[in-house]
Length: 229
Image 1 (cartoon, rainbow, N blue to C red):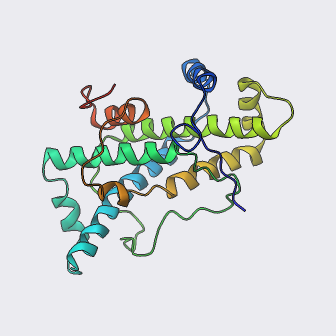
Image 2: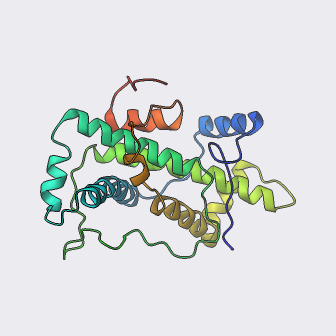
């Protein structure tokens, strides 16, 4: 049976004590990270999935099978409003996933690609990059930091003696199996992001304060989020 830990915006809301502890950890800037090339790959996968899920919806709703992927991705970002909508959907989708408690601590294998994905022979995902590489890496670091905190809370809940945050980070750096599990949990969360239902909303997602607004600012390089800070 898969084990999940509910957090933040999920079924179990964070207590004021947990929020304060998370804020203190984030402000301490004591986090580990993954290589930038790996983080960039995850960011591109998220961008691809957001574009591909909209493509699939269009095909399903129109019944057309003659839409070329290259033509679609060029047309989908032909205006500033369309780009902004895509960035909002990404910001909402990743925040919903990483704050919903859908973390699988029994994961042992993660499949990023799905049936019907547009993968050319060279294996390179074709997409329109809507934000700089640095912005994508910053987004992934924010999501990886959230995963680290959730994993810390999970370990604390199953151990008799609570670790300090510093001890937890030391163990992550020293224990390959422990770090591998953290990365698997992170990858599983990425692979499980569902942008289809976000695109299917009658109205585009309202900007929410906190992580969603922060990620939107990172990707769009804007200070005005259209509501919430």
